[in-house]
Amino acid sequence: MKTASLAFLVGALALPVAIRAGEPLQLVQKIPLPSVEGRIDHMSADVHGQRLFVSALGNNTLEVIDLHAGKRLARLTGLREPQGVFFVRKEDKISVANGDNGTCRVFDGSSYELLATVNFSSDADNIRYDPRQKQIYVGYGEGALGILDVTTGQKVRDIPLRAHPESFQLEESGPRIFVDLPDANHTVAVVDRLKGSVIATWGLAEQANFPMALDESDRRLFIVTRRPARLLVLDTDSGKPLADYPVVADADDAFYDAAHKRVYVSGGEGFIDIFGQRDRDHYQLSSRIPTRSGARTSLFAPELNRLYLAVPQRENQGAEIRVYEAQP
Image (cartoon, rainbow, N blue to C red; front, top):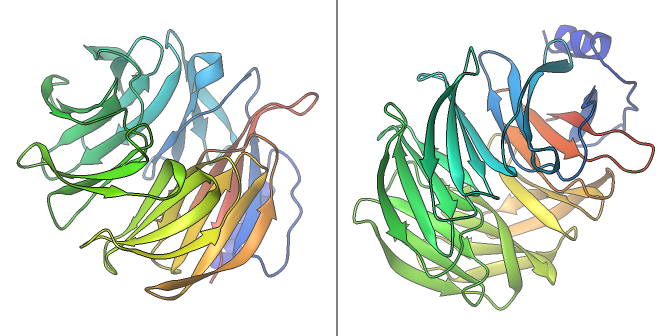
């Protein structure tokens, strides 16, 4: 089945790819993003429908990609610097956070009709989803997590923070949210989402902590900083730093692949860095895959065993999505 799947993907390629033998991530598909200019921000996947939602921030559009056909399926316009995006399959809704005007717009996942607009003070950014409570979390403004009811599209409440939140991760087995606050002396805030408040703050020696990933089973939090470019490993019980490693510069996304015990970090320097887990406290850079300057954002979809990399336009090279398959 794996061979047949790969053959299908290769046959559906919109552009040719070069296989790099032995890499933990194999490039299997390139999907052009015609007429997409400027910075590309975050993404979300419709696993069942084989769609990818791409926030084309510099283009003020949301690009909807058909992963089977390897081409754009739809384009949502009228956005203002779209940043975070999340598709909730059970509700068939797409939530898009806009940095320029601070709105979160909710669209129907089939017709793409605008269903609701929620206004935040400014800079609506990253989005996460709590399936148990059916709530969308939006980081925004000078420091808050806004909570929306995904069924009604209405705002429920805010959780105040000391500064603008960048990446954040929700525990599945508990009530905590880990939040990067680079403008609050480069700290990580630990939020109890049931209490609606910060219960701990962990300081970092490094600066500009933006990407974050969570290994909940081993109780490890991965923080990527930009000054200097480091991958930090923290204990989620105490916040104690356990290890740190040099990493690709200008990183904007990081993901933990539980099935393969790896951390993927995409950076604008032009690489994907892959760290293999030796044990819960030790990791090793196993591969550095060259990409393109400015390719900072990515999405790992474990259900599809795929990592999607957003590659912006550069001179005579058009924007595209590069699709990588995780190898054993």
